[in-house]
Image (tube, rainbow over all chains, first blue to last red; front, side, top):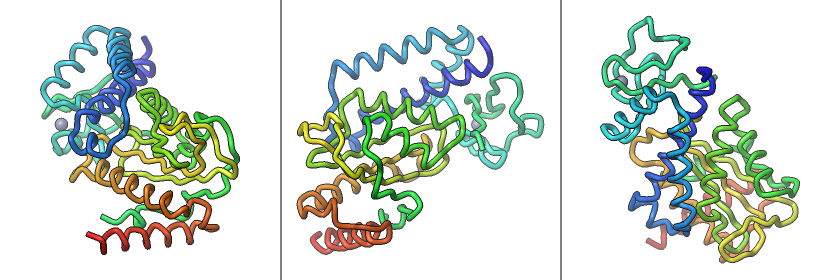
Length: 114
Length: 155
Ligand SMILES: [Zn+2]
């Protein structure tokens, strides 16, 4: 699978996980949007299928990080990992040709498109 | 937190051409962001809509999600010149749409607070039948400001 495709799957997986997480937030529930249970179950299924499409090692890292931090991916802002707020080493500061993780916290790093 | 301060004139379109729900959501997203990640936001918003329409009733919808694609809270407002079908909870068509996108990391939970506030303000707008009133983005922001003030006074 090409890096672009892996990245695309990872980003969508991450967005969907955030979506599912928010449904359980008390502040979200309080707002009162009606959520359909069947659709929620099918979204959980969709995220599992997305995970299965990823190369095994990457899927593994993602799930491990998710368990540990809830949010497995951290955007890079001004040379900082936005998961642990540590400055990244210079060799990591530009988008490279592989999936990078933060040397400090281990989260998958994401460079936002400008 | 003040909703009016999060709105910008350029992101308020009170004369949106009516269309299919997904197309309107897409147009609003592209008014915020045009890069490759805009597609990601559209997909996530569509997944959110599948969970249950964000059409909260009486003509207003509030599509929302978090996305890795944004680094700060972004809001776009659209009002269609004719009501459109949005599978809203009351089955009524929608004409006023608040679109809100938040970054995953969100200090102070600004996203959920803002979302809650928009719902509250939207209910006032429908109660007072003000959806069609503002004719310019400036008037729209002034209206939101006024409703916010009134809500604060009531507390
Ligand atoms: Zn880190």
